[in-house]
Length: 255
Image (cartoon, rainbow, N blue to C red; front, side, top):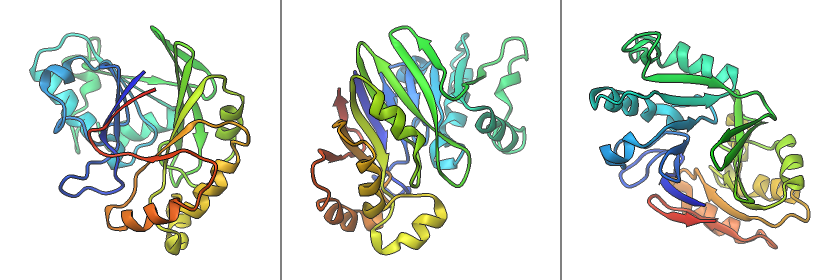
């Protein structure tokens, strides 16, 4: 299982891209940064985008991606998968013919360039060798994580989240869970604003990882606000009994 980190930061600055993970050349988990990193040839291979939530730093480049696909004359649609509420938010606030053209009706409603597919929480979607399950997490807007399984290995992408519970019950029972991609946006000195904005600090990250109990997947940390990255790195070293890797833009991870 190969995962390419297109972007992994909680804010955008030069050399700091927003969230997007590229799996096996045809699947994206979130799309905060796509078109400034991938060549047009690579973009044309993408068939599915799994969206954790509708915040701009996780969905912005769907707009430019579908625009590129249209003018490259791609015939098959791009499928965007998420929960019903998240897809409604994308339609209402992004692909609304005001902020961006509604490519679910372009070039026609019968043959659109983008399709939206609703994932019912807990149910699995089969994509060739992949099985994908949506699981709700806690954030300031409707948000889901994705359990991605392939060939006996599983990876959990949490998207943005504050302290949550249900997803960890699934993770503890998941055979073959090799990795968890989880955010930590702010240092613990900013716990108040982290709680208000639905994000984790190293203190609350430690509490979340304890919910894994005996499960020992690798932990890949992302979504740090660049200004606070060094403080977060220092604080994370206090978390024991976990293999924590802080990821970087452009990194390729093999599971």
